[in-house]
Image (tube, rainbow, N blue to C red; front, side):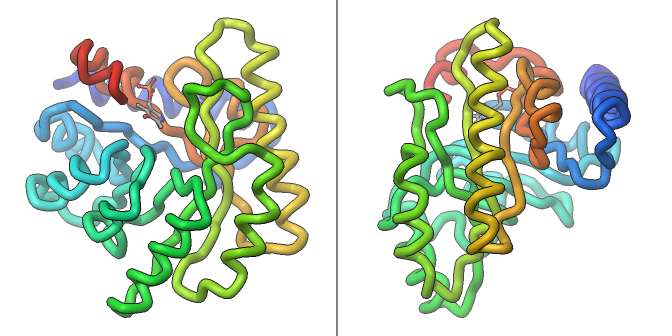
Length: 234
Ligand SMILES: *Cc1c(COP(=O)(O)O)cnc(C)c1O
């Protein structure tokens, strides 16, 4: 599985180049290898090369990875939607939950953590494209979710996440990323932990980096194409 190592190297070189151009430090960027639907040996191959940060989009898939993957010191990220009844599968074992998109889920995570003496770092997913197929709160709902979780002591809201629309029109994609950054800049004034921007996937991570992304979620560019059917339900 030499290709996984080569892909990781190529992407890291690319990230370094873009950071250099935009006067950013590569130390502020985390590359999350999105391993969803790929077999465990793909994860092991990336791990052997030194990669330690992986992402899954389904809570059940992540729960299965905790058992299946024996390698230590992996930082697991949940990047897909989380229903209240699946909180128990992931909370406390996941470095970061990117995809919290309701007050109910945020408070559900906080409740679960309080009962189990845990704490959990999360991001709020924002729908910056207005596409109905996209998850996330609308930008206008952000103040409400931040206000209603103000006294949640067991979650820490570390930033925002978004997905750009599927288009080749770079300007449209950049506008989404710029909007997320602008929301972060605005609400960071009242919530200082709001620092991270999770945006950028295989096809648009260069644009995301230019707009200030700190967390890149990259799957196919590292592991290759996902099996058709599963990829669609991602
Ligand atoms: C699958 C997925 C990714 C990675 O997509 P690629 O195009 O394979 O890089 C990123 N973010 C989310 C939320 C995903 O579900």
